[in-house]
Image (tube, rainbow, N blue to C red; front, side, top):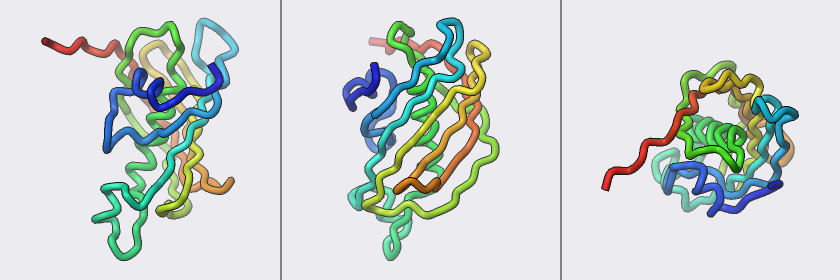
Length: 156
């Protein structure tokens, strides 16, 4: 699969409004080996609109997307990069964030191009290089260490 829609994203990510921060996956580069996810890359889009709830308080006079939400969007793309169609439903939890850099403000009207690449696949532990660009310029980047585990079944 080279791209997928919001409906397909929602099948992989458990997030929902206001915390689903990926609008569309535009490309998937599969891992070179079927035994590891290393090298698997996902690129996705997050359209940043003035209607985002966080802009009401961050900051009303000069709206700026909070860095922690940019980081969350990048981590969500990292979770999508860990996904393969035959995988069971997984929960993807951030364990640590290293080398995070925020280079430029993200404002309403921007379109984030998010990229996640699996650098290391140690079973449940994944190391993902993440970045966010606006108009071809890097606005944020980080290395995210995450734990992938089976998603618990909902109780009825």
